[in-house]
Image (cartoon, rainbow over all chains, first blue to last red; front, side, top):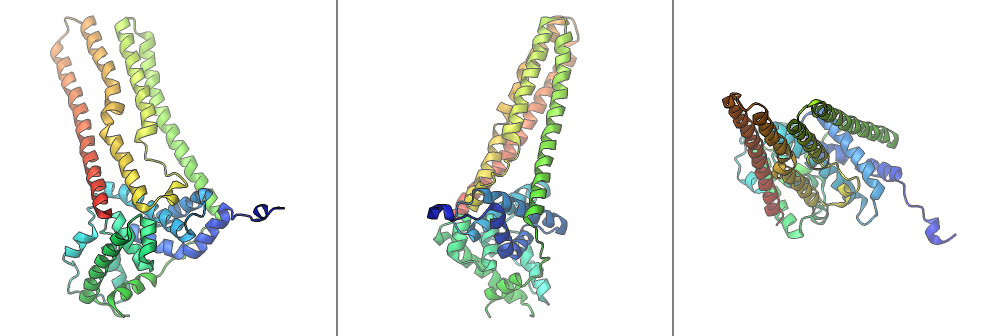
Length: 180
Length: 190
């Protein structure tokens, strides 16, 4: 038996199980950034899982499992926002505009983590899909290179966006603050 | 701890439900989803076929050649619209692999462009195919009833044209909105 024959590539189910086990919690948080309603969010999360499982049919290992998983999740999330925006007539803003928007909660201190999280989610859900993807990935702790690879943005562009995110978050936390 | 680390910590420590789906559960759900799509397509096809059957009845029973041409043109127009609805207007079904192989920027842009093109070209695939039948109906009407009260028919024509122009304008407006989003995406990515 040749070496190539001996190497058994992971099956679609194995790839999915691996991704779900490793990134399942991150996917759940990510779905929260794309949908506020708990019932619709549960459906969205299931849709992400189904899309992920289906996508692994053509996974060729040219990018990491993490990049692939995040791409699928964000692409499903962005499509969801696109469809929901039409029905809800929502106006979304870019990071640039968000930097200049007055904070609606200015002066009001977030008394606990739960309130801080609610305000963070409110801020995220104001953003257009691409910027939303960048902030969610940043909050997940992805580095600039990984964010760029998933989003399809140049390193310079990601750096600018992260700089803006940091400004927005710094202003937001300084004004609101939170108790651990 | 700085504010950014604080935000990351708030985000990463949020409570989650821990929803897990086994590969079997996923397969089941994917199957359900595909059946739902098939049922929806079948419903759409049946509704359109009923209209075509109705037109075919008029086509078969019309005693006069001009009326037969009219119904024939309507049938051809409806078939054109039906095919176009399946290929252009339906939301692009997510290609299983492309969704993971494409970056968010490419995938989102292609989704937007697909929707914009369908709206922008609504005249060619949705409105224009029905025009020949309507013109033929006018000709047949005046040929068969030359002394009828034409005012009523002119009013009907005006309403028909107004509906066509209204549908076209609404779609052009929606296409322009999508184009703005695409331009915005380009700016945001540059």
